[in-house]
Image 1 (cartoon, rainbow, N blue to C red):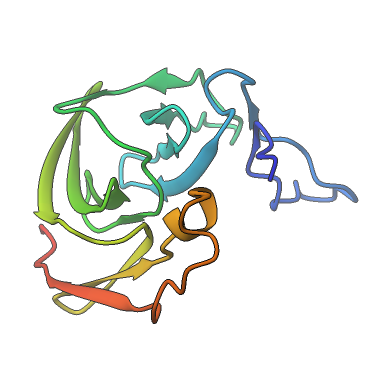
Image 2: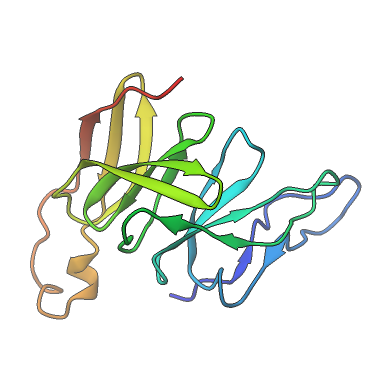
Length: 164
């Protein structure tokens, strides 16, 4: 499938009759996937194809500021779903892992919470439990596995206490 490099089309400006592109960058947002909004008012986006994490400032008038690529404490592997859980913290699934990501300026501190999942694509937090959906995308993407049964799809849980 083709991923559009334009981001956040689902909002209408007051009085508008058509959707507008809010932020666009054919290089940085080419494979934009996960989106999270943190208390600092910025929007955080990951690129599953480029294994990057970016920040898009929201200006006072609501328009997008310049996109900044963040520096992770360790390399990311195909980051996907994200969920904000604290003032500068989010949960992120990538490379078979569930991570806690803490933003400090242009740095993203990555702490692995759980490993060994099969194609995690989304995460949500309910109480003190993070739930991660396993999409098992390797059965779609790997020609050797395409005709095999991926087994039951599931949500994997991990205990997690969000920072205050």
